[in-house]
Image (cartoon, rainbow, N blue to C red; front, side):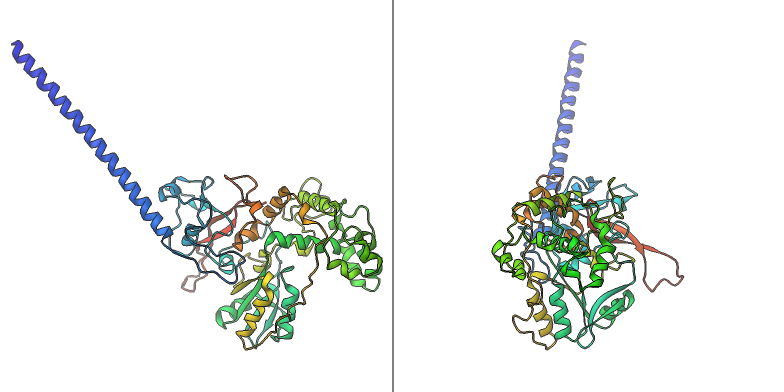
Length: 473
């Protein structure tokens, strides 16, 4: 009896050991399959993202040539990570991946089991898309409430048109506009006119017109814009030799003088243009009365003008947000038209949708751009003819502007950096998700379906991918 009991105990022990071994074996095999499968998916995804060898250099974008291997220092991610990133805050996506989604090579990775996926956004850095500035702009939508004071509240836009050469030019202030006016009027038989959005779309899409404009690096443009705005808004525009025979300029100054009241420190210490010049123009030039030469030599600003500029940037929002000190200035009223964003000149003011831009040229190479456009139409623009733009040196010493101020400016201009796919200056690139960084967002947006196959004329909505700044100021 004892032998029989002992035998059964041994059998049960043996069976239990075998069962444990089987369970352990199943666990090991399952774990191995998961690891191998994950690695395979990752390899397939990475191969798909980086199999391209080079990205062509687009002539119109003020960005640099990029390859899929050196796009930037942001990291790629797996599809599973994308699904887990519900809010989109934790991952900075690679520009090549965002480009593939925008160009329908990849689906938009909506979060799983999330009925509100249209709120999901993907974060990326400006200037990393493998698109030209004109192509990137077509995916941009400007919030006409946020940027109400920057977009024209009309359905017509002022353009220069050459019907002979099927060319339309849209002006962006402080982006080679003087050279453009010269090229269109004197070489390409262009005339200024106001054009409705319907007519512009018909000309470009239906009649094969080319719609062009010129853009600049936003930070550099802001310096120039402020410099001109400071001069235009100075007290010498209300009284003095400059306006004694310009009643319209004088009236404009008094109509817009309220914009200065929020920044009372800007003009402390000088009421006349003569006093202002002593802050930036060398004495030897002033003593000989060669005032125009003041705009051709480096500024002697010792930090006085730069300090005013920095204080202005700290106080300036330029959008719809008003602070507690805003009394006379309407919320978001730009200090001057030259401080309007570039992107807002390239959208329809009523809807915020992009103009059907064909090409965006870099304003720093305006002559080359206009010579190319003219040559394509059998017109020659000789070298040196595009010097009509005013080459004025800056009155403020930019070298004395702090990095903190530069980063604030980049945040103010995030719409331009994102929508025009312009690479950030190094000082504005955040490390490890710094709060001072500028980031862009891609998301889906519901828009009315304007297709002609809607027989019942019902209002239908479709989802469209759009680009916007990650943080709207």
